[in-house]
Image (cartoon, rainbow, N blue to C red; front, side):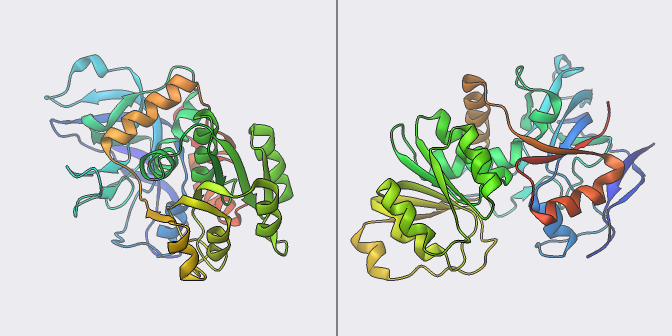
Length: 335
């Protein structure tokens, strides 16, 4: 049997909307009829060949919300017909501090959610938060887990602390800001777009800075007095400015490096201020469950920037590559 899917056949090739073999589940798996899937920068990097372990053809997509259509022999049949989300963090392993050697993310090397159907291990399936629409629920798993581990798991942000989130507008940064606000932190953001800074303030951010302006960090330091926690996915030459923005004892959680290699500045600033620099990638199964509970407790709603059809996956990928969105880009699949 076949299904419709958006398939990549090679590096720098367009996503092709085509027929593809429908997944066949094992005893411990579920078959989910996907209603919505969300893009991540990972899906664009795979397309450009900028990701390890490439295999083709591949159905990308790490995020999805849908309805359980079939369950394996070892899975409770009560799941049938339920609207669910998927934890895309596969094979984390037993060590809560770091992922196992065989760790992978849904969508490479295993086929992902840019299709009418996806199969996943039953232990990674959760009921959709009742207060969210399907497209909103599809938007948060990967970005939310990355943000939650960085902010709560690694940086251990607490109520009353000042938090800076860099590069607001992307999925992880937005989720980090929403989590920090819900946790009772005072949140500031950076962006190269005044429009995105204004949108972040409308969400509850206390202020922000345009990193394209000269000495933006000095003005922000004067305004805030510095930060207890910084969540950064950019790296690059401005990383040294983040060191300058740290209060004594601050924590910087780093989940990406879209701006390239760090310039961490003067080493004495790091050790004299007792700064912790914390690497963070995705998160454990326990952290995914904690994140879902946090979203339910605070009735958080992920921001959807734009919706495309599954047959428009290539358009959606190019839209993401432009980097103009404020929120997640979602594919509408089975409606």
